[in-house]
Image (cartoon, rainbow, N blue to C red; front, side):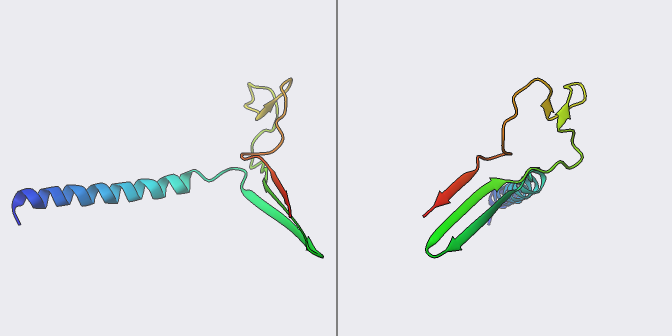
Length: 91
């Protein structure tokens, strides 16, 4: 194997390692502040499932002024839910 091919393979595998590390970092660093959850009910052939995002405060200011960095400043409309829209399924 020539030196040129060794260099190309080294660069190729280095890029793959960097890509894998980047993807792993992005998955760890982008955890939603309001994780998904689901609840279900089954009885006599009736199946109900609700999938929703659970809002967590985690030290954040929810209601307040914009200057305080509140998630929901006074005088603005409050969007219900967190992250994704809630789904409600019945069989």
